[in-house]
Length: 405
Image 1 (cartoon, rainbow, N blue to C red):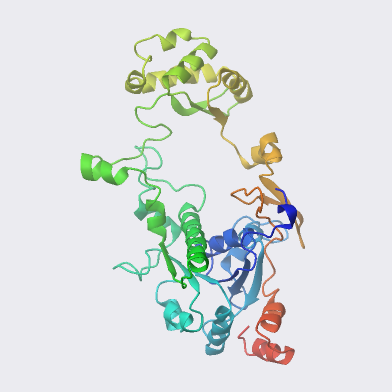
Image 2: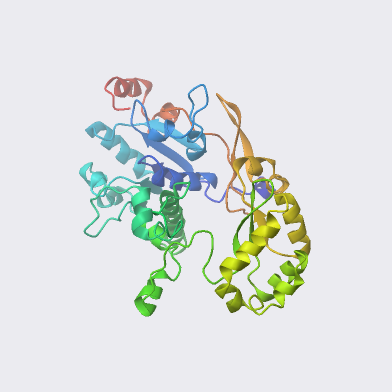
């Protein structure tokens, strides 16, 4: 992805973010802001730091392969927020910040004297992003809430998987990432309001379950107005055919979406069965929906005779939407990924070249950039506490000895 053009700055350059909390929802929000140039100062407890330093698959040398991504472009400082001195240092740091991101259980920041009312007294322009399981209000606010619980309560687990099996999880931390994305969107929206309309700061309150709910399409009115509860339908959309995942001769899969009448006609011709498009059982959208299962069986018979690449080549020439189910290996080797620079290699101090997903979305004039991988624990203590807060070397050493930083 290209650098900012004509000497332009990164979009969020000059915005200081103090990231508190741990694991995924808060840190991914911080990652998104850092990707576009915000100075994100990540606050971690002395000792082990964020548990994300240990999560995920590890290399043989013990380094996790997740931390370099979730903490990319950030600065790390250590600070014991459970100690009064640590809370005072946090207040000083936040007094010069534009955004605070936290994902503690509601009430935790208030017990530390770091609630929004306290912080906004000295920094009225502060934007505070608060990500939690259930939000800052309501009868469930104090419950512990992880992403998996938010996915369940938000409804996506109920519609994921096959009807004859229990609801599975998606293979990534979807609920946390959605909440973080909405949190980052809320942060930049609140900053725009502050800067463009001479407004003050405000709280961005995101419950993980409601971030998931935001993706749930028309499921609410389907029940409230039509009495229908959408359920699990596996790889298909009921009565939308053909739109499914089909096996190939080389034990791979191809996804085909040929449900529009004109597209289905092109597919039938390309598959060597133009008569399918004339058959009253498949000629129209409604007819294909009524005969979805037998149509899928016929298409599976066609795909099983071909490798995934052979099937894709035929469908490409016919203008039929289709794609392979990609693995990480496919992503790293794919030419389109390469041209779009979807995977970028960043130098890691310990592991050398480190490939990871690039910044999204793409801005053509002031794009985001991965500048460095996740930092060492407390790597920026001297820079932040010395240069930003003005603490002397002796003061910093005394704080280290007392376990404050």
